Amino acid sequence: MYKKGFTSQHNEILETDLPVQGKIPKWLNGNLFRNGPGKFEYPGQKLVHWFDGPAMINRFSFKNGKMSYQNRFVRTEIFKKSFAEQKMSAVEFGTDPRPMWKKLTPPKMSDNVNVNFLKINDDLLTITGGMSTFRIDPDNLETKEQYDFGDNMGSDLQMTGHTPHPSLDTNTGDVFNIGNNMMKNEYIFYKISKGARKREVIARVKTKQLSDIHSFSTTENYMIYIEIPWFLNKSKLIMGGSYLGALEWKPEKGTNFIFVHKKTGVVQTVHMDKAIHFGHTANAFEKDGKVIIDMPFFNRSNINDMKVDYVLEHGQTTKGYDSFSRFTIDLETEHISIEKISDRFIELETIYYKKYNEKEYQYVYGPSQLDDSQFFDRLIKIDVVNKTEKEWYEVDTFPSETIFVPKPDATSEDDGVLLTVFLDGKSKRSFMHIMDAQSFTELARIYLPQHIPFGFHGQFYQL
Image (cartoon, rainbow, N blue to C red; front, top):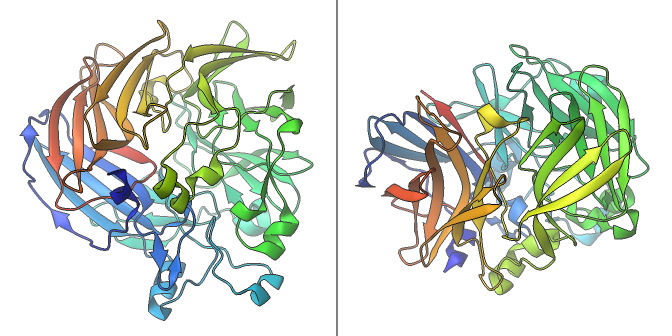
């Protein structure tokens, strides 16, 4: 029943005052924007990987106990060209549509932006792991233009990509991110100061071979890039086509934790012999002179398991999943310890980000599944202090990432609601699910007239 989430949604709609089952809290006023693939094919070309689909933005607007919904594709140049010419006109993360003889030349990479959002001052941007960033109108989801950071990324920063998971310093309001220079095998650690738009380089770190760069962590003093042994073979990329096809898993290389001091740019690398693979870290902070990073991780690479045909045939596998654990790194001794918090599988995990990012915290939320489940089929709440869990489950429903929104007068870390888009496998429609984060019980659900393909990340902005 989860397979409907991997079928394209061609409709773009605006629906207001949708019927509510239960009650939306009156204090919940704002917009939840969700990003992800809206289609799994281009004209004449089936897409290979979950990451490949053209970006579709979904907006859920809450006001005075009501909800409206709108969805719209991001009109990137490649999107417009592909559908105007009725053929796929660029290479996506895992799909290269070119005939074999054309693969003797470097590929034209897509400007797709289907992963996340970044807000710079009043500008709402859609972002991905490549170079492209588009500004959209938050009121009608109209695509505006490629965003200009004012720093001439090509000649000044020389970046060929960056993570789709920028980190907000909740104390200063600065935004941090990591890019790369593919030709120089260089990671570029940079920040955008509060109120600015220009990216400022903090440090450039050389490496023998670039690792896949998707997410990273920050603490009060450090940016931390976890260099997993999932390396990019540039020759394969230039001559072979897709980014996915150029990645090589080399577990014998272990894992490197690259620390860059936010103010001084001083770099320190701590090596761990153990090879891990992960998608996202939940949180990181400093305590007793050590750096702590909490995250779920695998003992094997699972990125090829996210190919669409594989997920449709086998489901989403948890094979090789280790645990949700705490990594404690002593920068003086360079010793790394791993403490298991929970055996439960969790991904796309989130916290009360705006208050507890880079700080000690207690709760993490996210979609989960059992080993014999075919896809995310439940939500869990992990108490990282007491090492306990709560679960919410309803048969034949499939959740996405969940977003925490605090009450205006919140008195505790979990005093608020969780917003999650679910696919109802029976009705083949999606619904917005609103849950009390403290008791982990349902408050309301609002069904949409259509389904939303399984997406990735979202951001909530208060009105």
